[in-house]
Image (cartoon, rainbow, N blue to C red; front, top):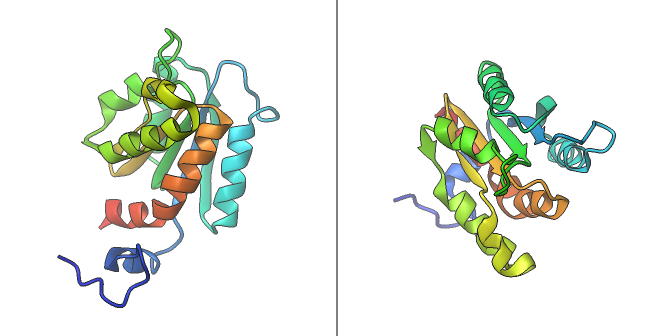
Length: 176
């Protein structure tokens, strides 16, 4: 077990090691059949947050909710130097929502706490409907993939409460 004495609350020795690596390299994927770069409020929000955090934006793409296109984009992104791939959209229960299914099939290591905690936090905002969320995260070919619902409130919640506090730590963990 790590010796966490004399470290700020909530910070572990791993967090401090992660603070000493170059800024995390992040890609954003908005899954939508209708959004454009001009109307993608989630993409704009995430770009702004990534820049404000001093992280590196490797790629930003809007892709339709088509399994083959999502799969192909994942395969393209894992060949880049991105460390974290942030998906938003396509996690619901409708026939068109396939993002979760594509990502879940590919993940080599699941990060079950991401979806669990996201749904818990979401429950505080939307009540029992939070159970419909298929937010998921894990590792595929050495890259962390995180997928959230496409509502702006969900993207903001995931960024502020789960992703931003741990993104540098995730980048360190997946590459050590």
